Image 1 (tube, rainbow, N blue to C red):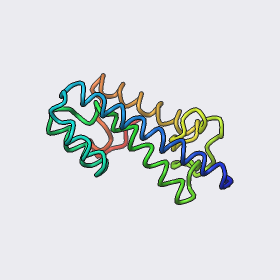
Image 2: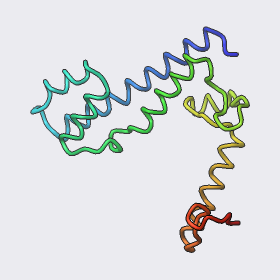
Image 3: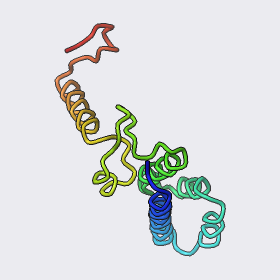
Image 4: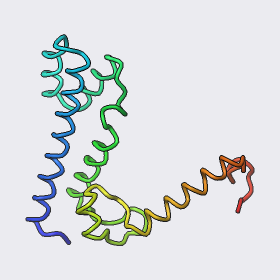
Length: 143
């Protein structure tokens, strides 16, 4: 179990990273849109993430460009921290190493499970490349 002091430090670090990403998004929007949306952007930042996403979509930017995935991972890590499940692998239930969490604070899988997932993804890519059907497509189990 992580000490309260470590939890608070981690929460602060994740929150600061999230703010850093949002500030980067804001800067990119300003550069792309100019000052036309500046007052609307300031309002959006006060109202939260959803409004910024809506504004970005209205202006033709995709959320991929806005680093949505990283923000979602940070939010997920913060939620796990509050629930007391931070640092526990979502696949096997074992602890995620402190070294891995230091390198990637929003990791949800231990190294072993992450490697297994990557191997499975590689197998799926190879299947697609060679046109091998998935087991769900044939109703049979494939090798």
